[in-house]
Amino acid sequence: MSARLAAARRNLAAAVLQDEEKTLRALRLNAGLSQDQLAARMNTAQSHIARIEQGKTDPGTDTIASLAEALGAKPEDVFAAVRAQRIVRQGK
Image (cartoon, rainbow, N blue to C red):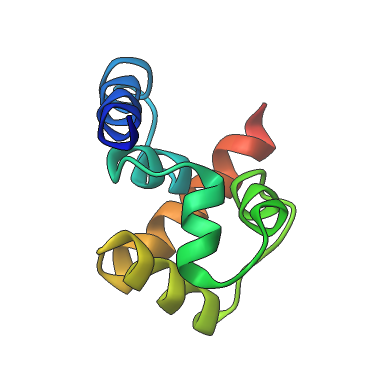
């Protein structure tokens, strides 16, 4: 079941987020993770991940490094995704 949910998240990211910039949400969904799963990998709360994705919290360098490790991504890609996420959210 877990593998099916992860695949569904990747499919959702490919279908729905194809025109959206590479945001943190897109990185997370492409990794097949829910906010809760990402939070667990980082030893933080799901609400913290949600606030970052909503552009309400500006993560520091340690959090960006933790996000990168948890997502299996480069820190610079996560930084760009967090920045894009804030721009997308501010424009809506």
